[in-house]
Amino acid sequence: MDLIDDFQKQGVQFKSINDAIDTTTANGRFFFHIMSGFSELERELIRERTHVGLTSARSRGRLGGRPSVHKTDIKEIAYQMVMENNQTVGEIANALNLSRSTIYRYIDKKREFALG
Image (tube, rainbow, N blue to C red):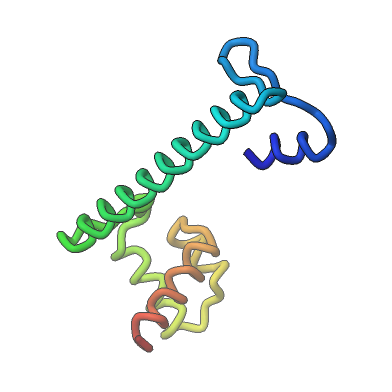
């Protein structure tokens, strides 16, 4: 819709070969605006339904997102090694075959949970 409006401001008209849309006529502009209104309505309905579905799933205890690759016990061991030992995150990552970013992310998550 915005693209067609920009074209019209520049004096460019839109005429679809496959559809009966021709913005050079009043009827064509009207039809185009009606169809874009329906499209916007459909997009908003999909957004609302998705939001309701996610809220419903969360209320039932379901969490979305990508599943965790590493088990919590391995990350917990890494967290304890960071907090109790004088090992670097790099050494712990090599020992447990985890990435440094996974360890840092888990440490941040544990701190947020403890604070919050």
